[in-house]
Image 1 (cartoon, helix red, strand yellow):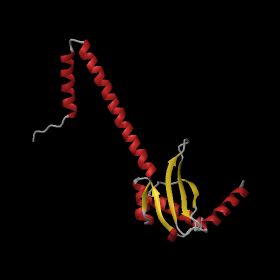
Image 2 (tube, rainbow, N blue to C red):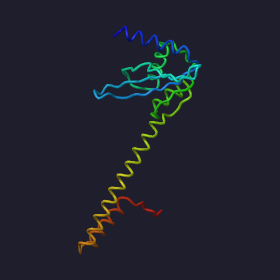
Image 3 (cartoon, rainbow, N blue to C red):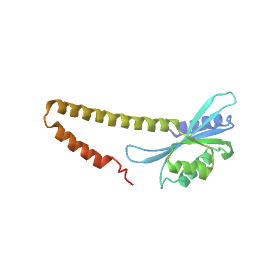
Image 4 (cartoon, rainbow, N blue to C red):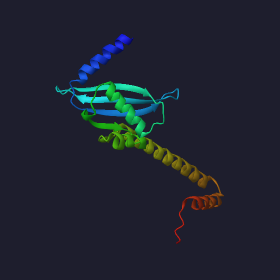
Length: 174
């Protein structure tokens, strides 16, 4: 197993020598066993216009994941793989404040917000809005059913409207 690791590392180093500039992706995640990791990946284009990507490491997070901590881990990883910082052209991360601090204030590389993370956030918010709207429509459907089948609708609707006004409407008096 160790021999295979050495062979793969040697092949990666050989390919990396053919790349003049790198961009990096850095992301943290938590395993099902509740262990936190930091993944660091390098991307570059060879002189023959071939896109190469390398997982430089999957580092267990052993301290508070501050921007300073992530910067140290990236710098250590670059040193391990003999990648000069001057070859870095950008870093892509999610929008977490520690990641922004890491890129913009600690290593001072151009920062690219991860499009996959942005899309994920948009979809989650859209689904939440859809589910909320769906629930509202279901409640309205129940309300109209109640209207058609109950003589006490007016009292019920008045109480419901009063409750809504007291909880949700802004007092416009100044």
